Amino acid sequence: MSVFNTACHDGFNPIDLSLKVKKKISKEVGSIEYRKYFRFRGGRWYGGIATADVIGCNLQCKFCWAWYFRNRYDLGQLLSPTEAFRRLESIARRSGYKLLRLSGGEPTLTPNHLLSLIKLSDELGYTFILETNGILIGYDKNFAKELAKFNNIVVRISFKGTNSEEFRLLTGACSQAYEYQFLALRNLLEAGLEPLKDIIVAVMVGFSEDKDIAKFVMRLSSISQEFINSIDWEVVIMYPHVRKLLSKYGLKPKRYINP
Image (cartoon, rainbow, N blue to C red; front, side, top):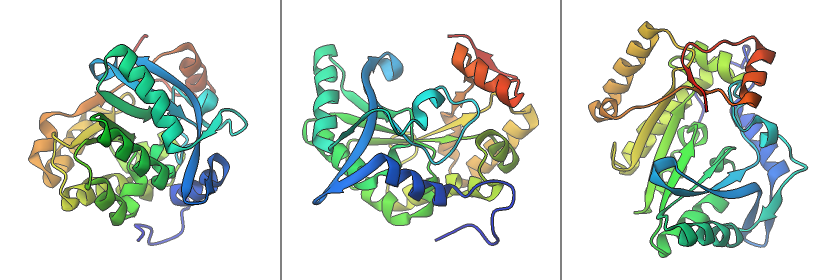
């Protein structure tokens, strides 16, 4: 399935990039899919969560806090889902967390690895927060159906901008691919996941005009009114390395916070 009626002319195709990056950050050993991890850590997000930062993404966001390891395919360790889960679970148990997540890169690049990790989390009573740009969930309805089989999952779709032009500017991907993010919401809803309970909508508004934010909210409400009651508004976190990256691209956020 594709939303592309014509070839991408104003940026790269993130579906193509997904396939290319996957080859660099994963391998299959028998029926087990291994993935490259950069580090494991605890943190205060969501009130306390065990986090694994993964290498590799299908977007190239110009405000990305993880840019310094996102594309470093020479770094990190290839781990099986079981090995990754054990490290996450160790952090969670030590700190009293009940939440687990992957961050840094795009978790959905290795779907079999991800689904196995969610299953392991479910078996031991942890809630898994799937932070994703949603591109591959929008591309593949079956992926959404597989995710909907679990009772312990919350999918957080992070929109990169409030419209297709912002998306292209901020990610480098072609503007048409922005539609995959909305398709991800529709696919998850059709698969049986519920707004707010199982699906969170986040949107980067650090570079957005107020009128464009309003238009985004209106479009979101056309999918489900419930989404607009709890939008996670994202602004740029001005870490020193993020400030350096933004300067490289000549971008000045309208909304940001200092760490």
